[in-house]
Amino acid sequence: MGEVMVFCLTWIIGLAMMLFLLYFVSKHNLWFRKYGLTLFIVFLVIGFSVYFWGYFWGFAVDDSSLLHAIGSLFLALFSSGRIMVMELDIGSTKASENIELYRAIYGVVMFSAMVLLAVMVVANIGGGIMGRLRLLFLRTIGSRHNVYLIYGVSQESVFLVKDIHKKDPNGTILVLCGRDEYADDTEDRKHLENDIYRYGAFKLSFALERRNLFLLKIASRCRKHSYIICMHSKRWKNIKLLNEICQAEDKKIPDRLHLYVLSERERIRRIAENNIYQKWDIHWEDPEELAARQLILSKEYLTVFPKSDNILGRVERDFNLAVIGWSGTAEELCRYLIPGVQTAGMHIRIQLFGAEAAEKTAYFQVSNPALGQAVQLDLCREEPDTKEFYEYFIHTSHCPDGIFFTGTDAAKNMELALRLDDILQRYQKKVPLFVKEKNISEDSGILKTEGLAGFGCQEQIYSYDILINEKLDGMAKAVHCFYKQYYGEQGDENTFWKTASIYEKFSSRAMAVHIPWKVCAAGYVIVSGLPDGSYEQDLEKNPVLVENLSIGEHLRWEASLFCEGWKSGTPEQMPPGSNKDPKKLLHTCLVPWEKLPEVGRYYDTDYQYLDTHLVKSIGHILKTAGYAMKKEE
Figure 1: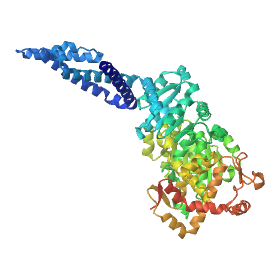
Figure 2: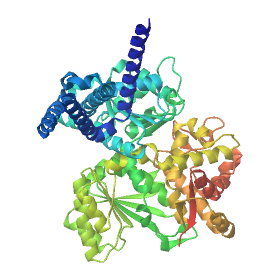
Figure 3: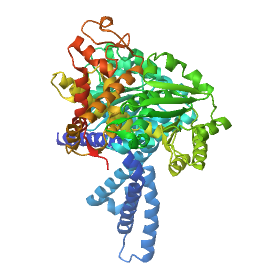
């Protein structure tokens, strides 16, 4: 009976050790890949010592000589090689095999070397096996750290995996690939998969009909946050996966689950208000919009603000910008530039160069019929990189306040920007230039050297700080919370944000993205830390500053809706009790500042006071988001 118990106990211990090793290796595979060879060499050296001791003392005689030691040395070197092939040869050491301590040391060394050798092989070439092991443990025991589930194998997902591992090294990253996509395997794809594995993620193939179930299972087991990031290059597949997740039968929405979906603006606009998405924390992301947003939130963009003309939050002059080359990024950039400039009460004029711009901007202009109330769009005939083009910037008396190179060809953007910068410098004209890039390259260093600002690099867009932990959402949540509490609702920013509609999230983000510009108009900068109350004191002393910033906020809000196709409407055109009709894109408050009281009387709301109250609460909003305002010196 005792022997049976010992046998069973041995098997249980062995099984437990195997499970622990599998779990440990799947969790720390990068560590093993980095230090596995070093550890294996250490155990080879230890193994050599064990063999040498066994050969030397196992065959020792009274008159053992130096020749015996040398022979034992070479035999030990030879036997150490047997560790590489897992060959058990303890019997060759003769008498030493009967010593219990020697047998224990020998067993530990052989076992450790065997495990390390297997781990090295699996860690370097067994990405699929490791992914399955990690998935098994995630579904069984969960995780105490964040889990990232990325759908789609592409260069963009490689950038994201690399940055997530850098910012959250304890997190688990799984890159998902449908089994039907193996037919598309190419050399480039294999290189991408190797890069993904090298940067700390596991590639995992799955059946399409079961993927929603195991994704939700993993999320429910995660004790921290779980992120499902749909970034397949075929954007319709992202929407398909999202629908399968949101429509899963008998589902319980896991706490702390966040869904990120990359798609095109028009597709998002059509489907985002679907009822099946309302209970989920879904982040709709357009890569072109991310590129534009990255620039708008950058310190470099604030350099175009005309501080010398700013008088108490208002700039009494036209603001001229030039956009060279039209693309999705250019369109999204215009949607940000136009409202942002209104914050300081300026009239904005945007010049578009080339015949191509006239053709490609047709939809943008026609789909936003009230756009003319917010911006003057001028189509210039000068083709980029022609004599007339350069002469225009040389001889014009109204040089743009900023020039944006946003064509689809990043190399041409770079070349044209450097040429125009050279021309402008020769004629002592200093204009901020912003260049849309694709990847960080040697040219990026040239841009910085020449004082030009690059933006839109894939390495920067597909990153942890932009996609997952972007500060914009922190400020947008604070803005949305401000409005909710203003209307008397109870709750915190996260609770309000979860139940916010797409329109409310759009409005809050549109406000948040221009807070740095508004803060600049007030003569302040955004910093980390706690507010000192100086902003509120300035507002109390300067009622004109309050009024100018309030008018600027109303103009910004109007322009942001005009850029989304909205128009002004009368109360009779609206649904009962509402001041807007999101389906018809009509809003009663899209009127000049002076006419807001008239609209407010109809709805028994002081809309001017709401803008003024928002301006006075910017310090509180930034504090909620973890920032403060500091007087600019």
